[in-house]
Image (cartoon, rainbow, N blue to C red; front, side, top):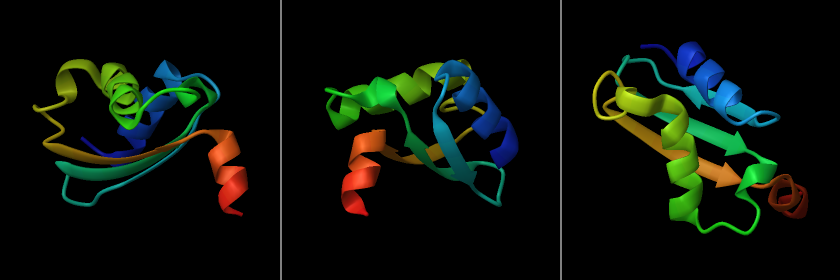
Length: 79
């Protein structure tokens, strides 16, 4: 598994999302996902939305995925 594949899967599952995935060892990854679909959702619900885009890869080919999930409004507010 590679970061580009994970990024493509998240982008396909969350249309319009801005996604940046990093990870060099093939099993541990970090992702920042900015999506309007996160509006009004708590962090756990946001993470579940992302995990759903990856399906059975979570816990298998993807051993760990650290997530930062933000709405476009939250990004704008942080400057």
